[in-house]
Image (cartoon, rainbow, N blue to C red):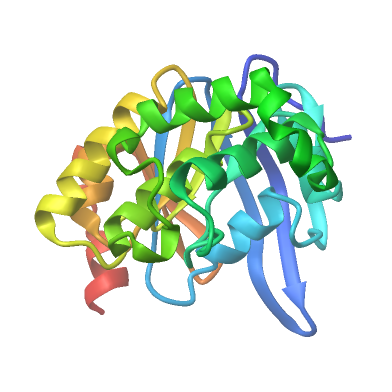
Length: 250
């Protein structure tokens, strides 16, 4: 019988996910320790986003197990997994475009605390919510854009706002799906710096197509190829791995 290994932040055990006859995740084993920063990379179609969907509860695995800080989470609803300590961002921005920066963060905090959105008229009296939203806004350095509607932010600032919303529940494990996608080099460098500071002390798992970001940010890198774990090692070892070069270059 498969059992969780103590003292791991996240553990995947013989994880599989199929859509019909197509197996996208193939018997994946992965162990991540608290506080580690892990990069997930692989060619298109490697199964990276499906892996995040399964880990966060958006998809139910076909078989295998997922453990989060000693608690089994595979098959649970996304909101339950979130409240157990795992939060994720998405490839496409998941913000409320007609709300301000502060209001977006406040919505994320409301949801994480279990408040119903029907309580909007009482928001001025919810000091815990307003204080947490202000704290998040400062954490991701958007104080100066507090009252700006999200739709009027630059693409990079929208991604920063989504980072703040992802952090709203103070989860111990953070999954970021291509957080620097579509950014310029200077914007990317700013985002990497924000991710480092905002997730300090947390366990971070990041999908990125920009290998420079992965090598700059990650302590260890997992390379997926056709749903299988090709290698899981330090950035230096990944750079030197002939199998990784072949997977990307053919």
